[in-house]
Image 1 (cartoon, each protein chain N blue to C red):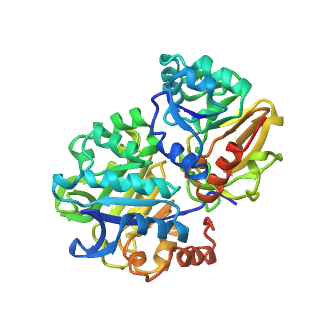
Image 2: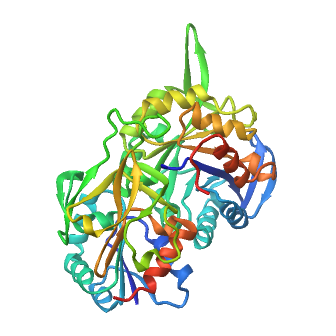
Image 3: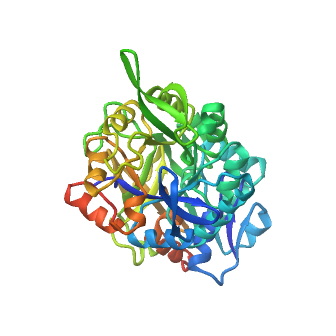
Length: 256
Length: 210
């Protein structure tokens, strides 16, 4: 018996609602964040991830209010990301009730923010999100880090970047394959495995989950410590319970 | 009053929310005021981040003697670094703890260590793990043996006195995840983030009289 692998539903939030769309096009309303969070908690989610996809700065404060309300009713770890730029943003989210804050673009712009925030608030609450895309340059192919939801190439090698982020104090890495995100073809297992083998900190696999076998593969082949999915849960294709039962039948340790 | 000791390390809202959930009528205060800690009938000593920072912040607020007094006199719940600080010393920054209990806080070793599925052992130990109860204690009431609780830590306790070990967890090795001695109960995991089992433990603490 040992540490359970975690299932983390991801809630994209904007204007106070949970939304889901493919590649952020045609966003569909998926409910009130507090209600959705409670539902997943009751189904046995091990953690919840919230991604604030609000474009305008005017409505940024809404996510704090949402997290405050979720944290009063749901007693499992909450990770919040999207638009986190400064140590002050991290502090505000933690004070609202987030247990972990995920940092993405701003870690590229200023890697020192990972060191600053992890030394100040503890590594346990700093997650670095890495969006990567397989890139071929001449005879060389590598997973390249992208920012701004996959629009901007950085030239950085995702595996090296992951190691650097862990060394600066990230307590966990959320690795998303941009090639797979929204495709329902499963995680990019080679990417997940390459990073998981390279770093000591836990890895959350993300991007591409279309069925329950994908979750199993992420753990068994990719070596992920946690698996994140959105669409398969939001529209009732599968419940968290079903995902856990399937993982268990594949001899993966889960929390029942 | 239930006092949750605030010494400036991290967010205590989760702890407050969990106490409020199980005990809506109780007077619960997140506080760094020694008078509150003295007046409280139950004291919670949380902690996150690095232990050297926690000890420094505690001393900067002159709270060391209040914590020690409370730990000697009334129902006292240590959580995470709040457990670690009760002991002699920690390998994290080679810092001395409060020395209320004998033992050392050590770092998990993942050199050539694999987890049960054959993958490299990750540090921190993060997620839901089984808590196997070693001793009977009022704080385990209505909690099943081997129920899972949420952990996040890179250092663990090696207690000098094995008689105070109240529960163990396995992460490549067995380690002590809960201790009980007289009016002190302390856990390495986070009951405030451990769903039903965690809330039950907090409820048991609120109802505990020594």
